[in-house]
Image (cartoon, rainbow, N blue to C red; front, side, top):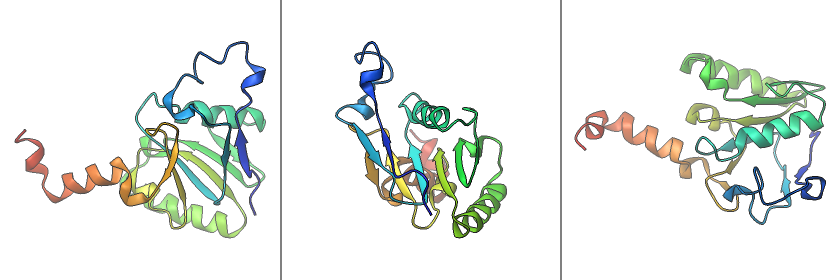
Length: 157
């Protein structure tokens, strides 16, 4: 069961639409972001607007903007910062159990491990405007894969 079906950017509520965060490339031409999966990842470089959007959603839902959730709706900002790779995988199993019970997740992340959640929707904030991407298309996946296949190549630059 999904609790949020879309994120609507209500620009008219702000005195100026020319400044942050609406000036970010990811938000150009975006009025609504459909949420079509129980798990949606926000991915992109630092400063691209992922956490800003996640915090705005949390605020509008009455949650603490630092992360958390209730009523089976969870928002998580960079869980990988405090979780080892093994714990990220354990978190994926917990997420699966909660999704099977009807939970919905919005997650801002840089982790290719977390992004691998089956059936998740991945929104790239590196695109202008933001766009859905396949897991294997994310820079996070591609860069991590190249590094793991040949770490020495990164030192031969």
